[in-house]
Length: 127
Image 1 (cartoon, helix red, strand yellow):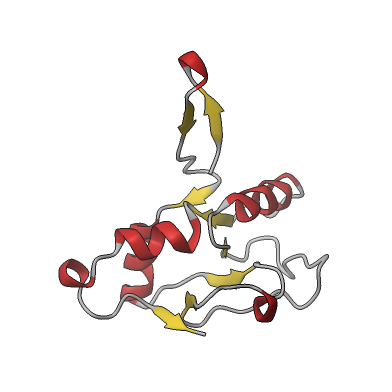
Image 2 (tube, rainbow, N blue to C red):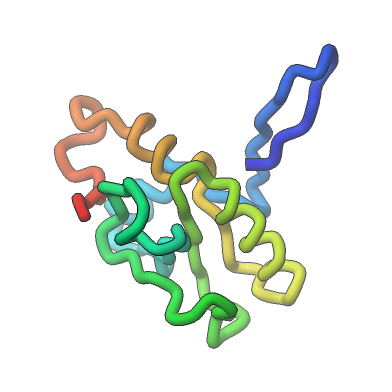
């Protein structure tokens, strides 16, 4: 999540549609069956307190992973979105323009998709 300091030093979070995908847009893609490749880039899940992930998500095969195809559509995510945004920025600068980060990470995804509104299937899975 790109953040900058506003007047008086207040942090301002700004959505960047080139770099990120919104939780609801990703949810709609998952719902429609047109999901991009999902990569959970959180470090060592076994060592973290993470209890949720997205259905069908993969882990990068190695720390210095790069997409095999420059036009592969990929969404990176972590808990808060910061690490995913940084990696998405690096990959886009390296020519992988269809790589995006999940805005706000899994925390915002879970918070923004109320099952009473969107239905029981939110594509969140327990680890």
